[in-house]
Amino acid sequence: MAVACPNMSIVVIVPYHNESKSIEKTLDSIDSQTMKPDSVILVDSGSTDKTPQIINEWINKNNTKLFKNIHSGDMSPSSSINLGIKSSEEKIIAYVDCGLEIPSHWLKSSINQMNKDNSDMVSIRIFTDGKTIIDKAFIAQTYGFKNNQICLPGSLIKRNVFDLIGLFLNKVRASYDTDFIKKFHQYNLKRSINDKVILKYFGINYTNSLLNGAKKVYSYSLDAWNATGDMKPIIYIVFTIVSLITFFLQPKIFDYYDMHLVFTGVLRNSTMVLKNVSSNIQKSLPLLEILEKAYFELINNNFDKFIFLIAQSWEKKKKTSQLIVENKIIKDLDKYFLENESVISHKLCGAGNGGFFLLFSKKDKLKINQRSVKIMIESNGVSGRFL
Image (cartoon, rainbow, N blue to C red; front, side, top):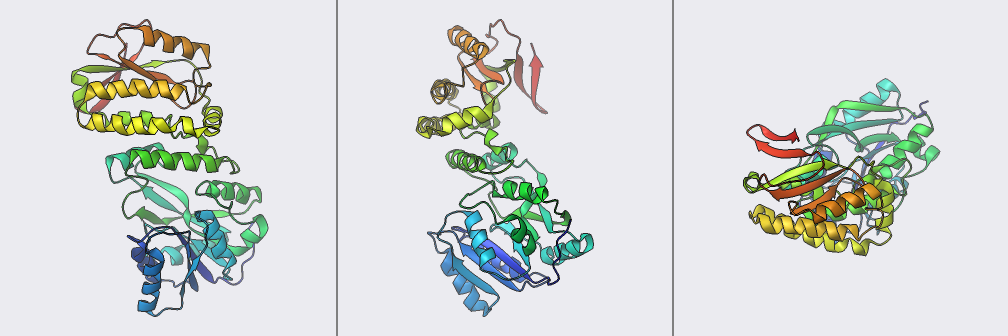
């Protein structure tokens, strides 16, 4: 059921925080739209760099009254967007993030789609591929590598919708989009997808650092607890980040060591574990330091030290939550691998108290009672052989 919106005036709302390197590109992209908005509101979420100053200088240089720069005081995109909505009167809210390549036909194409479908919201897609090896790894684990996925940034939403279902979840960095879409559908409102417009990132898509990536995943997961229908807490700060290291494995390591996966047969329960860990996050912080060290040793081909740090991270990981090895099968397997002299290092791979054990052993020296999948590097990529 679409809500009526006779006056199609448009306001573009752009939340920002420390975007000094890319903000002028964002301003130029909006200014170059083939259909001009009636106003543009840029909302500062507590920047500590020169972004507000750059925006003001750009506005003065272009002698435009179309753009307005305001300060929210809250370091969260959702609060900034909400302030922009409350500070405007236009009937169509067009929300977009900084750091994105915005096609010049974005507004015109999306308004045409809204009129054609008589929809309450028109969303577009974003292409995610990552720039560096670390960025690509995080993208693959979160948004999807080389993926054109539907997103909330770039959406055009009728103001009547906010009058009906309320504003975005306040004071959060993430998951306000999932919460909003969930409520949107509960009211049987109509959403269209404009496949003619695809956003792309200017540079780094997610992160260029293991440590920053881990912190980002964790903070996003905490926000998800407050969101209606958001299952993103299953993405771990600590429990999946160690698994990401396997993405960076140097082929040379397989000249000296073997890697095997042993299926535990136990279903995983990541949500309960993350809730347990988040109640005492201080226990997880030492893991971040170990991960940085392990990555450094790995890329420098110090494989003995890398494998030692993997073992060390697993021991510390178990201390973050009693639920990790709560299951008897997991506990028994852990004890067996720890006492097995052919297993140099091992850890549980998977979100929660289940999944697979990853084992490291000397080349062709593994002797275990369980069946396993041997990980191998071949000319056409990575393969596994069931043993």
